[in-house]
Length: 110
Length: 113
Image (cartoon, rainbow over the protein chains, first blue to last red):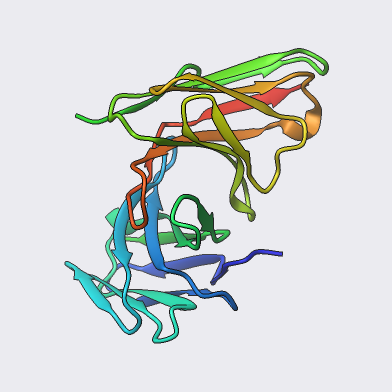
């Protein structure tokens, strides 16, 4: 059983569409991170959210941390082919190790 | 440019062989991690180390051991490889404390025949 449930598992959309990826848990996290991984590479950090209710924007990407610090979402506006990749959320409980969700594979078609 | 380097990108081993996967980081990070990545399961923590010669089991330590003799180097050892250990192995490092970024290597894809 995944401590962090990500949905959807797979998303295939056309360029220009909007999308949201969800990361849910019954556990409280001190912080939550989102990573993106491209084929043949390791994951790379996109953002860290720390405060309940926090919203962070990174160009066309908007990240939100739930008020209770149990869930998070990633919204992409006007998706582009360069957004294609595996998106992973990761929650920090102990301050040393992160727990990862199963990931969302995003494919943006031109 | 900060870096986590894994020794082998691709390995093919036979059942029962001993396998060493090595990882080196140049950021002077206290914490180092070994994950395995399988489709639909995300990243699962095998072992991590928060200091030289210190280690803690992660979620799936069975069949694996680790070694950290120097701060910059963290090795994953499969004493007797089995087919169910065929996977992508990712090493990562992170400074001590919460909210720090995990820096990953490019991964080592291990196939056990």
